[in-house]
Length: 425
Image (cartoon, helix red, strand yellow):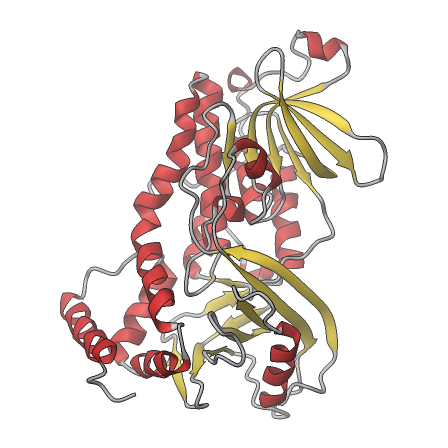
């Protein structure tokens, strides 16, 4: 594994009773009917489901608490690195993408072929459920309900209060460690890390029925990315194929920006205004990792709750799953040692692996997405073969490519020319 963590995705659940507290262990809460778990994972998206699976494989008693029924707005792109690192079968892919088309405000476009291989696309409704089901197969217990609050447990750990989805009275669980993977506006983070907040892009998309081939400019093997202030004043808009359906979306940090109107305009431009709309979804997407992911006592964050969505691109599935794995590894260390300082390892390891990429992407977004003049120049840069090659290499492999120093040097001077206005857009 290039991230230094041993992959256990293909292995059977391990039996390690010496690492877990039996649920019937003698304690005062057991007599009062409070269930006890080693770990409670709040949130069943890619981060939470991955964390629950990893902890269950390590022999811990795990409960995965998820609201269920909610589908996050997401383009659904997954790189080959994700499929390899997390043993995701190709049967979950609904489309294979051979390239991207980058569209400038002037409607000029640049095609960026992937080359060898492809980018996979998943439908989050099916993909997330498969991950939750895998966690259950690894030994985690699934439960549908809404997280309410945490309280210190008298004998150590936390009391986790939640309301079951069936509407019955709120219930309480005891957990030695809690993994908060409950999204960008994480209730776990708000309670346990006061002041923990990051800027967010609010994303909105419409899932539509894919048109018949040849009936529009739509290409079922290509992702279209629009850098146009009328479609997004500070982010981008997209059309991503999902096989029988497609995601047409946009994002913005600007309050009051008319996202539905922007998507209506994008659909008109793409010849998709007449296709059937199946559902509409919206959600905040964080754009910077939190400065701290743990409370120093027994709570660690993962996924959107920790802010691990890549700036500029908004890519989050791979980073969420890696964050879930790192949070689970840190929680495992805490359960074995009782030393809450081990929970810090999750963020440290993530930033060591991907902090540099996030920093560069943050600078890109801050500069190039500021106005349409800069967006035109940004799209012009994307014509460059070196830029295309290194972009796809970094995306597919999830690491900065260091093997081509001359290409990096050429890109540096080309970017400098665009930044200073010496290059023609």
